[in-house]
Length: 316
Image 1 (cartoon, rainbow, N blue to C red):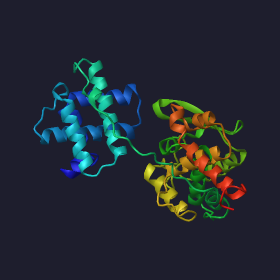
Image 2: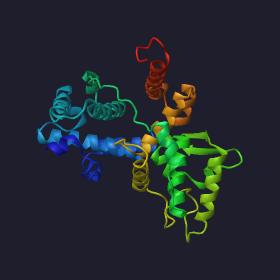
Image 3: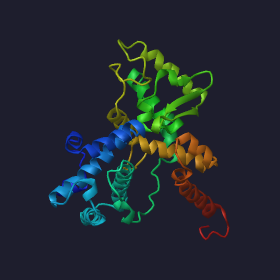
Image 4: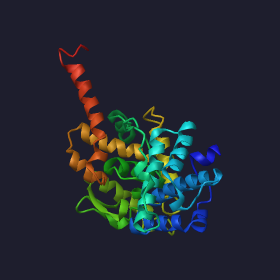
């Protein structure tokens, strides 16, 4: 029961489609109409799976019209009793809110039970990022092998840091997305939204060098920009493994992932005075609220400068 309550991703999510047409149509709506990423759809599916598994275990009604706010609160209380964080609980609440809003629009339910559910307050968690000295060591001191693999590993790290793109956006980059004359990269983001990110001439030069080495690979995928040693499109675990290993040489951070590189990109921009709206556009955020979290790190940077430089800071 404990594992089922906490996360259903290890379960066979295809059961959702066969057991519940309500859930199947909702997931199809997320995928084809809202155009959510496969990762988001899987997360919503997992949250719904754990919820309906809980209702079945408790022998409660499992049709959307049978579900009450009391049942939902009971499930949330069970999750909290297991030690699930408020942030994780809120994600599951968000999945249920979206699910019941959809069912209400479809006429499946007469009232939305989620209107009676309050989300627990979650403490703000500052983005984890690599300090500037760490990225300097990564790109100016760390040696990469003079092979196709070495060139690939360095390039994918450079693209992540220079653009702040998401892991899924990186692996989805196509060769034609790079405009060498305009020094830009076109990125297909969440919801199928495109954005243009300016990059340096130096990065464009590194991409050219990589493409020359890539052309020597037999049967390399020419559609996608980044491929592995076998010429196949990069998969997420490959990128994650490379980032974690290489960041391990330049930082003591426990969390070392492609998303940390995205946080690093945004934090370094804001710490150097970049306009927050510009950072929002570069990251592909839907709202400025999602970008404002990076101002906290900027304030901490300013605090350090103040304490080191001001005669009345109390730290001199």
